[in-house]
Length: 252
Image 1 (cartoon, rainbow, N blue to C red):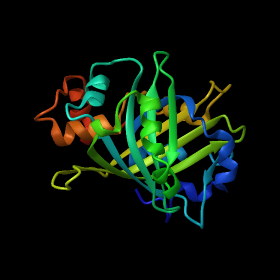
Image 2 (image 1 turned 45 degrees about the vertical axis):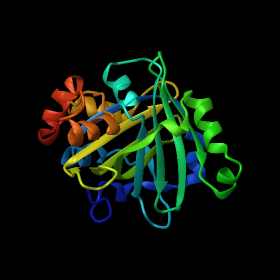
Image 3 (image 1 turned 180 degrees about the vertical axis):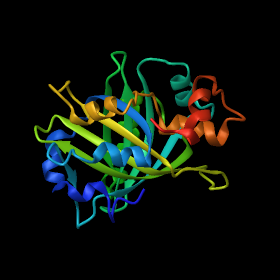
């Protein structure tokens, strides 16, 4: 999705990373929606007074590169597929615009809350061998037992409400690659809207707009969807098959 020229985001006021820091929402509740790019444009128009958009160096969309890790037998994927509570994902996320990379452990607890912990990848972290300690403390798994399994790339724009209690990410241009880059899948016509909050705000203009358009929340994991698209011939995908079949026909 081109969010630069003629985009509905052009009408929003901008906010900085410092402004957004008050709404990091590392311990949060998430609600996701899958829509086509035209539906996303319709959702955004008219909400300029309710939200601001992250802006850095004149840009309002940013490239995210994520490398997921799993055990050789795909335990983390299987836990998600089987609906296990207190599950997690392990990834390295790189922000091209800032040049920073983080090792992240993203947990889903038995109350359906998302808790994300991360550590900046720096020379000091490597020198002090802190990655192994971080991973074992956060996940209980040994770093030696993890291997790269999926690369995911996409562009993200981020909205923030005036109270700082609601953050909305808009992901487009989604692509998946095997670590060796031999297998690739793209969902260029799809937008993922994720509403993140630490408590339910009195009202959410974007959620109201999505309801008006008939859009319903979905369960969507980039790691699981990408794994199913690329490696469905060797992984159990029963739980994700309806979603995988519908991806190219997304409206709301």
